[in-house]
Length: 190
Image: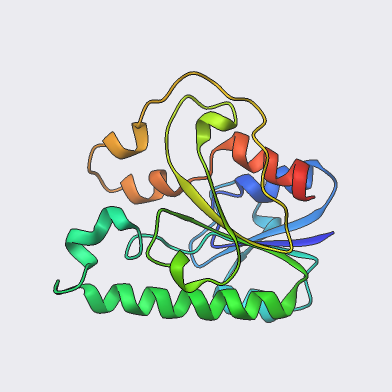
């Protein structure tokens, strides 16, 4: 399949699909940190989605303004609430265009104010269901895809992401897809 994983500079999901023999590309406005520049489109996600008909698209839209964990900064009545509204508007636009460009798609975000606006089914998963001893409730809006099945349930339940110290790399590190989830996506949906 010809696959686009949008808003993914780390290439974790892209590489998981490549390892299964698919022609997979990552796309982000950020430079690639996954090591395969030849598979990375550094451009606006809309441009990449509209480039061609894709067999499969995964969206990892930015979550900072939409995550419920940011309600005190982006909730109603806060100075940054308009940033949240714009993030919702943009993400829905990207999601709707994606569904016109492919038959199969998912949109990933943590527990988010975005999901009530999406008509498609939303499944929630945790890293501990895929071999990582951590909690990080993550939503997947599914377009013509079945639920992702757990592959390796482990006992650990450490909220490492939630406890992460502030710093310049915090947002980037918190947004990375766990390898076990990336592998399950490629195995089950590829």
